Amino acid sequence: MKKVTISDLNNWKLLGHKFASITAYDASFAKVFEQQNMPVLIVGDSLGSVIQGKETTLGVNVKDIAYHTECVRVGSPNSFIISDMPFMSYPTPEIACESAATLMKAGANMVKLEGSGWLAETVKVLTERAVPVCVHLGLLPQAVNIHGGYKVQGKTQEQAENMLNDALQLQNAGAQVLVLECVPATLADKITSKLDIPVIGIGAGKNTDGQVLVMHDILGISANYIPRFTKNFLAGSNDINSAVAKYIEAVQLQTFPEDEHCFQ
Ligand code: KIV
Ligand code: NA
Image 1 (cartoon, helix red, strand yellow):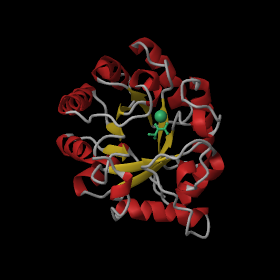
Image 2 (cartoon, rainbow, N blue to C red):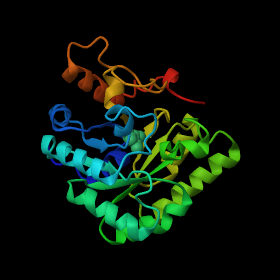
Image 3 (tube, helix red, strand yellow):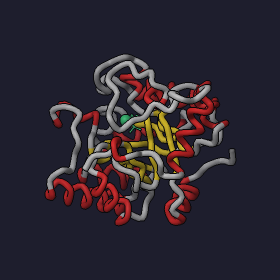
Image 4 (cartoon, rainbow, N blue to C red):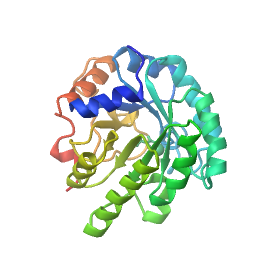
């Protein structure tokens, strides 16, 4: 696989080429993903649940993400790696810079922060200092105790308008990718078309520019509960390689997600 850059993601958005991404935590799986031409790998703080077996992502630290980013980079030298900034690693722009530096030095191409409009200042400070930023809107697992559970976000008209405004504000501040988690498909569609930057969805319908799933979910081995928006691609495949290939193809052909994986 040729080295994937943010320019590729931007081009795919312009051309309407849907692209897949997947979470990754170690070198062996990262190598499998690269062999199947998976362009984007996300070292998610979901490792709190799928690697550490915890109920939430709150216990994950920067050093955990840095360790797994290093492992993933060894297995996949050419993918575009987005590494999560974990809970409380970006309470201020200054602390965000320190956390982000650790992840970039570990091999990330971009860092991802959960939040809303309040992140604008941090996004600006990071991008001015040469740290590319992905922002994560919608269901924010780090805010599970604020949300009161893992719930679909942006269901009322007011929430939907706020989310679109936050997305535009963060794009203005310099964010180069947006992840949208668990939002109604129509809202994700609208945000994707209003934004110039690539939008990657999870539980956000089929019209985002890219899709992401947790690797354990596509292999049917999640430790905890399996969300409705995921699909086990290993079922009906001969091996992990073909499951990954099927997932990538389904995203490109927009046969995944199906209606049953979406929220209205
Ligand atoms: O932690 C995670 O796995 C995520 C996904 C949305 C990519 O943030
Ligand atoms: Na995450």
